[in-house]
Amino acid sequence: MCSFFNFDVDYPASKISEMKSLLLISLSILLFCSSLAAQVPDSLKYISFNPALFKNAMDTAGNVMVIDVREYFEFRKIRIKGAVNLPASGSLKVPADTIAKAMSLFLYCTSGFRSKRVAKGFYEEGFRRLYSLDGGINGWKKQGLPVDKKRIRKK
Image (cartoon, rainbow, N blue to C red; front, side, top):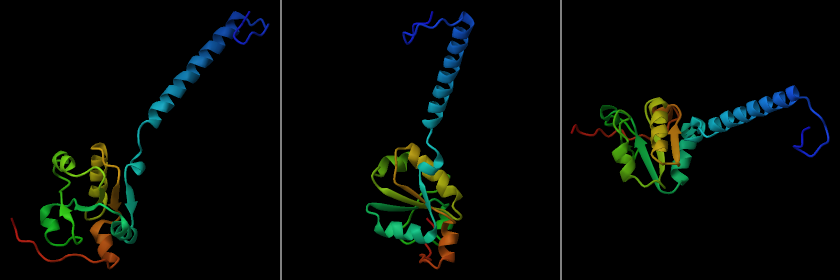
């Protein structure tokens, strides 16, 4: 007799065993799915904007830092005005420790690939206001948006 819900129903032992197995499998699936839900997909770690939206967000957001993640030799030729250079090839640990977590970080590279990778890294360091430029500076230039072409002398 099963008294789980106080029903006066006689279940055969095989049926009870089957129900216990089904319950165990259901709980296992539930735990597995909840562990997957704990992982944050990349699409929630940063926002990718096309050049026009990227510029608009930069202009309207407060507490902004524009970061060019290209190598220095790329940065010194052409860049978005006011950008700082933090190459994607370097470590993010020191810059992440010196930048306020509340800042809005606008990241770009040549085409958008490196900036997305760096955005994920900044997310892991605790930053939550992360924006990547789709198409990179190439897309920015194609849209006719302003760039700083003033050459920076070699260090």
